[in-house]
Image 1: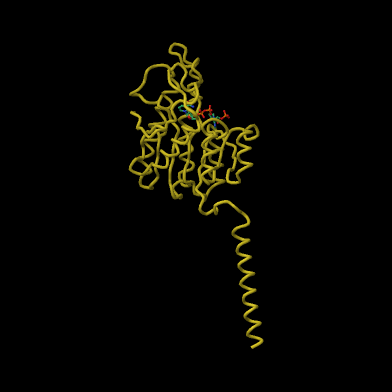
Image 2: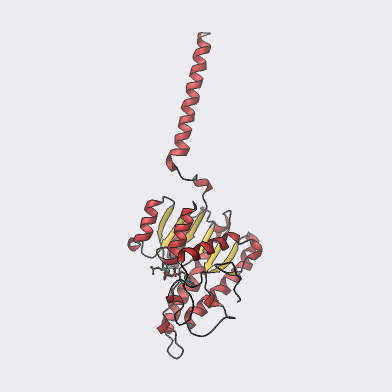
Length: 270
Ligand SMILES: NC(=O)c1ccc[n+]([C@@H]2O[C@H](COP(=O)([O-])OP(=O)(O)OC[C@H]3O[C@@H](n4cnc5c(N)ncnc54)[C@H](OP(=O)(O)O)[C@@H]3O)[C@@H](O)[C@H]2O)c1
């Protein structure tokens, strides 16, 4: 009888101990955060300012783990502040023209599924460098290195990470300025770079469909004059445009792969 009571109280104390130990193991490291196993992962290029910073903020707010890459983390005060307030924002140094660095980052994250590779980094080249008759071909090469070669190299390096994830998406921030059908002159370098990345990604979509990887091109519309100089257009707020683009990204399915869609869900003519 006595030994039975002892056993009873021993086993309830034991159960309490194990319950506490399990709670400490699973809950304490990430108190208040969604369990790591449930969080989706996005890797964003050019995440220190503009649209990339806003993407980082919005995905972090949704509980995603964000691998936020930028060229100069030490100078990225706004991104650092975001990461300080959110343990799921991880900052990594990356220049998308540095292919060895892209390979090294892919190696560092080998085995980590990446639900969304978001090629956001992009440069305009400046209006003054792309006036017909005075085109700066050195800038032409620089813009292509960032806007065209960068996203394709990122896709090449991270395809296995994306294919191993649940969502399996590679999205590239293009521009309506890359539409051949809507071309109205000016911005030769920038426009043709976005047209070229559209082709690269559309091509990629057909090649990775058998791995169920979804490739998309999204356009924010104008939020700042640098990308639209000389092209009359109304400017939107980055937070609204990014909200729209995250909804478009969410809506992408395999049968839409290779599409070119604006922030408001409207298809853009090639
Ligand atoms: N905003 C618009 O009106 C608009 C319209 C259509 C399309 N877009 C596209 O949207 C994307 C983001 O534009 P945004 O308005 O946010 O531009 P932004 O404010 O000028 O930011 C550009 C981002 O790209 C990064 N970047 C530049 N060169 C890079 C490189 N070699 N490696 C890695 N990162 C690099 C910049 O980093 P640093 O700070 O180190 O320079 C910065 O984080 C671009 O692809 C752009 O073409 C923008």
